[in-house]
Amino acid sequence: MSRNKNKKMIKKMKAVSITFAFYLLSIKFIHEAGKELVIHHQENKKIEALSDEVKESYLEELSFAIIENPTIHGELREKCNQEIRSLMASDVILLKKQEKKMAHRLRTIDFENFNKEDHQRALSVILFGHDDIFSQCVAASLTDYANEESESELGSLFGTLCYPISDEVLELLFINGEEGIKERLSEEYNVPVSKIEEMFDYLSYYEEKENEEDKKRIKSIFENECAKLLMNYFQEKEILDPLDQLLFASSIFEGNISFQHNIFRNHFLFILRDAEYGEYNRYFNKYTRLEESLFVYQQRLIKLIEDKGAKLDYDDTDARLLFYLYYLSYSNNSEEILAIEDASLLSEKIIEEVFTDKEDNQLNKEFLYAYFSNGSLNIKEVTGQHFSLYSDPYSLALFFEYIQCLKEEVEDGNISKEKIDTYLAVDRTWASDEEFRKLYEDALEQEKSLFASFSILPNEYEPIEKAKSYFLEEK
Image 1 (cartoon, rainbow, N blue to C red):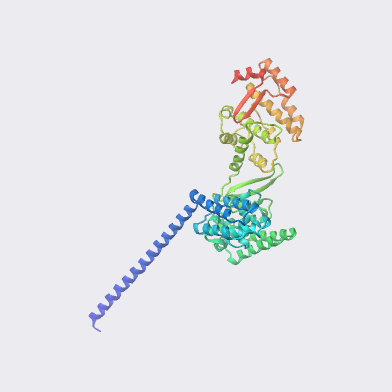
Image 2: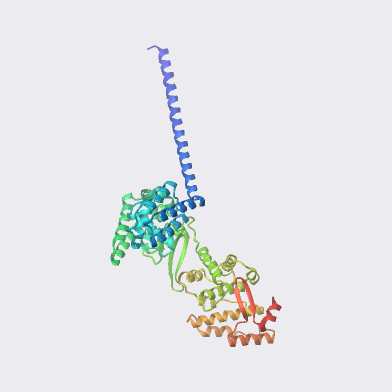
């Protein structure tokens, strides 16, 4: 072969190589671009599935499907409706094709043989079309979430297992399904999928057993195995945040804190036991991993103010709680408290004045946590506070309401009568007006209020006739 022919051949080979390389790069670029396009499309689908409009349309179709199936009736129909509503209200991502399958099952399956004891099994079939342990765990979790009940053991154990992927489990649930969730758990725990399968086997054994001792034994084995998995998870994280540290101090690791997680809820629940406050709950947001206990309890305080703030019946512990918190807030900042006309704003001010690090008259946050968790009112903490009692007739009248509340605490055995006598033994040179002092003394003696009516929201007071001139003059 001549030298010229060799040169031509080499040029052709170079040209082919360059073309092929360019082709490969083009294919890679197209593949990456296509992959990015698919991911973008999937993300848009997920965002769309979370929209109120889409969820409302799903709810309407699924609700009609329940009505159209004559074998779903009575208590089962009521429960199905409640749980479908709760499913749509949650952060779960349900794509159109999954919703269509669910609607089809609701319309076509014969539920006549499902009695109320089989409700969880029926819900499993509605959600996934079958009744294995994974679907039972999801059904149990949804039932607890829908009914706002304390967590079932099965739902809570499942939630504990899902701890490392708690912020993505509702996205995976119907899109990636059972296998996708198990794969993600194996990745986070750094164990084979077979180990995750084994954990679900334990849950299956637990659910099948009827004897309480057997269930207790299997639960203990599951938690021991879960502790080992979590140790793997913690080692991979290296640094434990406050949430991890609380979990590490839980009963899973033989601590005295109970942990509960329902995959449909937006928070983790820790149940703490304290000698002074009893058993109370703390909440952590599963997405931000920050504590939101005070926010949770503030919402309950708002509802209590709305329900009972307009009429304070001191026979009711709720009313006494509201008065104590109002009085403490008023003692700190009377002008702002008196100007508030909204339950939400009043609750915010109470939290700011009473439960944050201000100068005086503050209570521990656990005071509020304990009351809304177990109903115990730590009256010792309330009576240990300093009140600005003697500045004006209105303040004095509030002090008398406070004494009336404490008398109820004596009746309930929460404090001794001597505690009230200590308050009443204070030097009473506070009233410069002799007539008003006499009015106050008589009211104390006769156990009468200086208010004909009183409420914290709306912030209204109507003094008794004899006290009107003093109140009106002051106000």
